[in-house]
Length: 422
Image 1 (cartoon, rainbow, N blue to C red):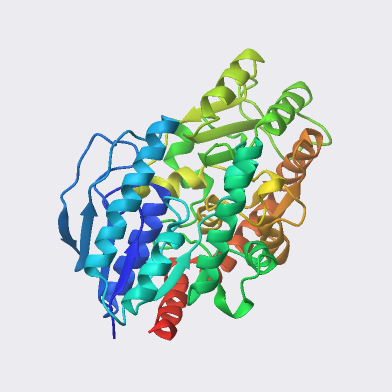
Image 2 (image 1 turned 90 degrees about the vertical axis):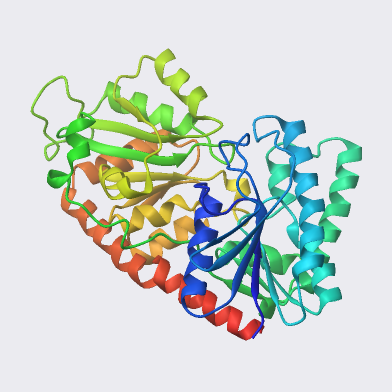
């Protein structure tokens, strides 16, 4: 049986989301007797100036860290140079390390690694599995690139290259049905597409009753009904809907009925909004909250993994959002941690979006449209006014999580797919 060689820009000990997903799968596969190697950069996501060791073995996984430039993600031109140097160095590494019978698993950071890996896999007699966390170049276009005639021509060529590399692969792993439908529309055969969702660790994140959660006291959440947003607030999201709903609830927090949401002090809001994390739009959102004089909002930084049970359980309901035009291209991974914590979710986005489908199928949340601040406010009040309904949805979320989105369950699906690929 050949080796499994993962390639992605970030890996352990980096703590970015894609790194943690890859690290969990790589270490999990190695622990079941597979031989796993990883080709990655020497950088950390939030500290590009740091340089990790070029070679390391962690939990028996062989890590090859290649040289790249280190401009970081905050400068667009510098990020492009970082991408190019990673492509060049990873191509050299793949040509050097891959042997016949190996399986190359190419993730999507940087974008379109499949285009690099496909010809090398064919030349070396290896099998390619593409692991799509997002779909490029569509995401780039939706987020504002490719508006000039020259850019449209360049993007057409990128589409052709990307489609070729996906069709050439032995398998393409996508995160949901909408993403699968998108690839089929681009000519990828359904038999070459496998749905394996992202996941959370059900032993690391467990449900915690609000009365037993010390963070609710230390963060001043008290007896409020807490609407939480945990994680990245980035360009794939928007916050106008949130601002509208917050303003509506501060103006009239007792509509339609708040008889079941009582607080011990008139200074404590009945509905309190908790935002944990960061992202490209995070500071703009905070500025707008201050500008509008909204007082029912609390902000906290990203929490370490060992504190996720407390931080995710601090919310009575969580928000998940995705711009509708990005459906089929991205699946918000924060949903799986919310489900692990046994909390319901309100999805803000397309009514037939991936998360909207999961919430409906498992009766673990509600969906409102982007821009519908009134609908979001009403959905929050409906759950606040029926706490037993919210608790039942949270239990449904945890039950579905244990069956579908726990790390153990997802690892089993990866093992089965890779066994078929060898």
